[in-house]
Length: 124
Ligand SMILES: [Cu+2]
Image 1 (cartoon, rainbow, N blue to C red):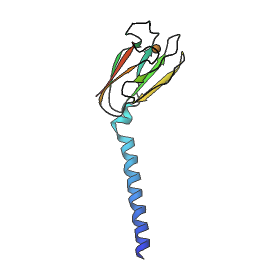
Image 2: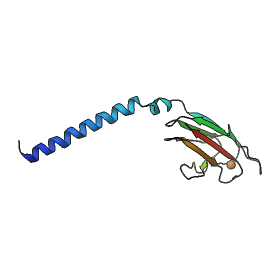
Image 3: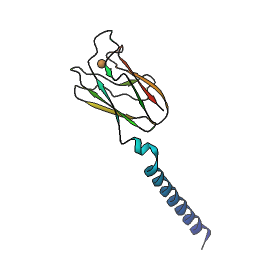
Image 4: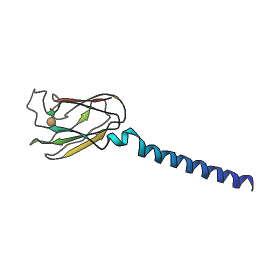
């Protein structure tokens, strides 16, 4: 076998190993299991000055878990991270938004049109 053919073979073998490893990791990771059960947050209307609006205002999840918000109010709302890591954009009444939290930390968010209403996601 020529050197060129050997290096093509080597690239193929390394690629196949990487693909297999990636597949096994995706199937068996705790993230994949946690993702099966999203945490739900209801979004309610937000009277001026009231800090309430997200119910519950704080949820605790594991890294890799999904949090799902549903607008149960009569007005449009958003779910907008203070650090910019996620943003639902305007959610019409009945609309849903979900986000997967990849790593541990405390993430606060607010409603852009009603910034007095805030929520927190604690990722362990
Ligand atoms: Cu709002």
